[in-house]
Figure: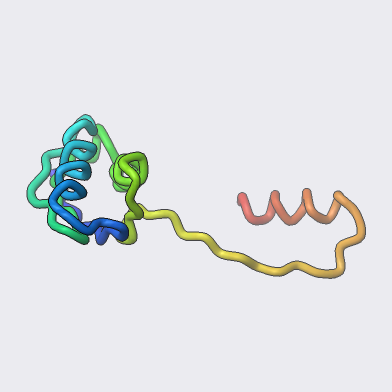
Length: 96
């Protein structure tokens, strides 16, 4: 079993705590240790789930996980392209 603590944005009350705890309890392989306004600590079986799945359960409950497993978005402006061929090549490079 592994333990993870995720910061969670958008929580403000006991109802939020209950909603997050319920969502996390529904994830197979997860045992909720503590949920407070702004964070959750769980232990999980790494053969049954991942931090990304745990983060998705939090998102599905309507909150924004900001710890490990939370999505990271990066915007990179690209200029100078003239056709779709360059875009396809760039996507292949990123995926590699």
